[in-house]
Amino acid sequence: MPTRRNFSYYLSRFSILLVVLIYLIPIYWIIVTSLKYGSDISAPFPKFFFKITFENYQKLFASKYFSQLLNSIIIGFTSTILAVGIGTLSAYAFSRFKIAGEDDLLFFILSTRMLPPIVVVIPIYLMYTVLKLRDTHFGLILLYTTFNLSFAVWLMKGFIDEIPKEYEDAALVDGYTRFQAFIKVVLPQASTGIAATAVFCLITAWNEFAFALVLTEVGGKAVTAPPSIVSATGKTGYDWGKVAAGTFIFLVPVAIFTFLVRKHLLRGVTFGAIKK
Image (cartoon, rainbow, N blue to C red; front, side, top):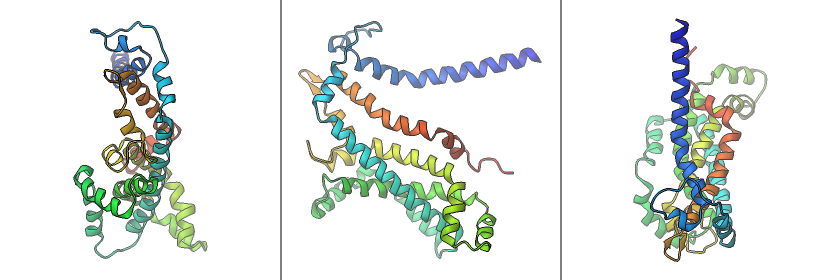
């Protein structure tokens, strides 16, 4: 039996390590590509030993990439805060109050996720042109918030449903108002769910490409990082070193945010999975 346990232990650790390595291969390839000269990148066979250069990052500093990355940070984080905030309030209402046609309303909210965003890009483009919202931070924040809101409502409703109502009843008996009970009792209990929802909403807004490409102008004031990465070209076509450098830097803010909420994230994605 001890031998079997040891074998299972090492096999599970080896499997985890193998999966992690497989997931890290694309990240590794992006990093090493960003540190190569163009001749090494376009070599017929991959070069694992090469002379390191930072010229690809220097090209980024010379371009407008970092201002576009700042646009992604402003638009992505603001839309995430709005989507999670409004979604949490809506989810609390659906979870705690009897609402006429609740199932129909929830299905209508969910139906906004059924069509790919690219399907509605033309009518939104025309509408934004009339309303003068093209190439504006507010326009993209509003759009990303709208598309993330349904996801936030459904996810947060599942988390809030798992919080016993007795906690709020006790707070109301102690003289708290409904809003005070929500702020001081429900939100702390739902913090893990909020963290998980925020990560998923941020990733969706952060990686969005179609709307960011169509609803902004080349060199405009609201261009985000994804379209600018794709437009990186050199003398002979795509400048893959610059693309890799921009991609790596683009990964950093979301990776930092996910790392900061990692303690809540694991509990958040498994919240309610085990019933007592």
